[in-house]
Length: 120
Image 1 (cartoon, rainbow, N blue to C red):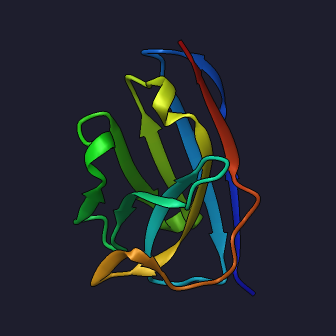
Image 2: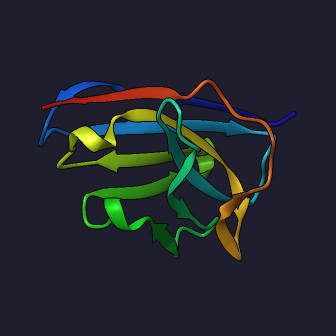
């Protein structure tokens, strides 16, 4: 059974940092991605990382500020978010994604997400 549990969100001021975690189960050897969603908008791709960790992908708005990493021994994917901006405010989710197209998810299951709020 596929399950993702996101954590690490919170309230920070502009310029602050947060580190999100995604504990995944039921998914093996998969490229993993982070997505975010704000009310009234579609979920959008943020970042992805291949199983080996050798290749990473980022959406343009977060390049240079966010870093995705993973610990395969713990089945956990991380998202280090620095220099946060109010426009980063969203609920953040993780999911398995297609290696050839990291913006395409492999599972219809979404966890509960973790709320990130950046105050101006």
